Length: 366
Image (cartoon, rainbow, N blue to C red):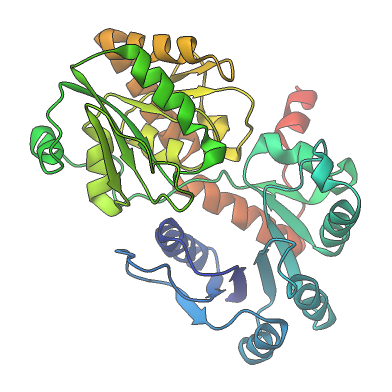
């Protein structure tokens, strides 16, 4: 059994616990034992930890002691550049003869803030690492072509306890939160400025529909919702687990104008079409197919945002078609096993197996 140590910066987010549970079980079947090192769990998690979890203050000396004690053959780094222990840990692992794998979205080569010293640091990290795991195929452009031979894709996604959401009482779910509108738009996730929620509020105001509610679910650490109030607007705060999924499935449309992130996976799993704006390129945007399982409108076009929301609220047949396509997209490309398979490919590669062809290479070979 090949020992793998995955270093997860800070505390484990709620969603990562179920992901690591599944990843550990999947890797075990492939001959790998997974240990995850972190600073603990985010408070309030409902997920049991079913993988080997090393809890410690993340520092170079702490991680060096852990590597010397547990003796992994492979180290996977999910650590941003801003953490000072990153490079000492990376070089120490290589000094010990470990294989090291980077996991993330790469550095957008087109962004000014990623040039200069950050770009140099990224290049050094990618050069030293034996393999790179990226969140999505379209992020391959975030690394220089010379690194392509050691790039692997593990579609960033979530782990669900069942293939489809079990049946539940929709009306009762909404009633628990005092929601009695016939149709509802929902937005879930961390409430942040970069998500352009002000555009959602403006679009909802233009709808002027007494039959439709706007439901906002998630922590508001930036005070985005401080002055948000109005008829049929429901600010519910953080909700996790099955209750969150049921609340999503009880609604008609998911809307998040900016920085979509993993919330699209929850929404599509629950059969909600997504309406968003262009201009952001989060890894998970790969799941959105404009006009198939959701809509993309021009950034800042509030009238168009409101129009697309109205269309999905009123056209039941279109909404059902989009909902079915959304669920199929997650079953086909966003299943947790797709993420796990990407990890196995990278692990096999650092152990000496040749890398499989990329999407572009497969297309060129046809």
